[in-house]
Length: 368
Ligand code: SF4
Image (tube, rainbow, N blue to C red; front, side, top):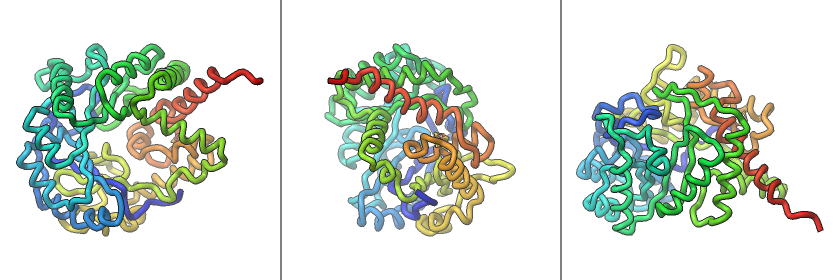
């Protein structure tokens, strides 16, 4: 794996900066303001994306703010320029989901991912703009999705990864009825400056317990665990070198105003004396395909990030699994892009893989 691919596998789009919730761990800087994406931005993105989608699988992920806060009429206008081959996904807090939204999501074949952090007591960071708990509204939205037969994925943020939490979490999501679960240990990034340093042993035990819970009833695709198992199986087969993509996916995020930030949506909307506003161009001026061609040569921080990936490759035994971490975690934790280990990669890569291996060691069949 060297350098960035000029063609991404998906694009993140921000239909509005606004979120109707005000979660304590949120990284978004402008979530109280309703800055909506003009249709001209979607048209410009679609001009590059439609040919990519005709040539292979391609997704647009509508991410906010809260994308449903843009309203059905506006979101329909933003979806319209994209061809039928483009898969649409929405990452939502579900609080605005009602019958009309379910009909909209079904009609536009939009796949849904819901953010919910587990049982009621684990959602204390999820509050409305008035500071009231959002859990009941989230669950009401999920129940509406289920009533309409809409499948959904779930994304849970875990702020205190400790044993005991994992089994509770997995059982909750089994009951919730999601198809896929992603587990994010809270990250220090964007406007969220809360620390994310944890002792190694409890985090590793958290992941090991999550594997055990999943193996008892593997009805849900558990994103992090399945990645880890795929990697360990490839190591045993001697094919691990084939797992990382040949080139990194640039994952462009297109902000509400058309600005393009590659690699980490969390960098969008920030500025730094050394790196400027992190954007690599604007689709209202330059076609997305042109912005992405050679982006590492024209965006200095991206070149610095790739130097950090090479530093990871030469120093970290987990590189084959991790591929070199995320740009935003390096920037917000280390203040630059060419460092290596972050608290994020310790929590979510190193301790994850070690937790999965601990589980495997504990469940080894006795020889003979
Ligand atoms: S685990 Fe951390 S140090 Fe190792 S390759 Fe990933 S980001 Fe780099």
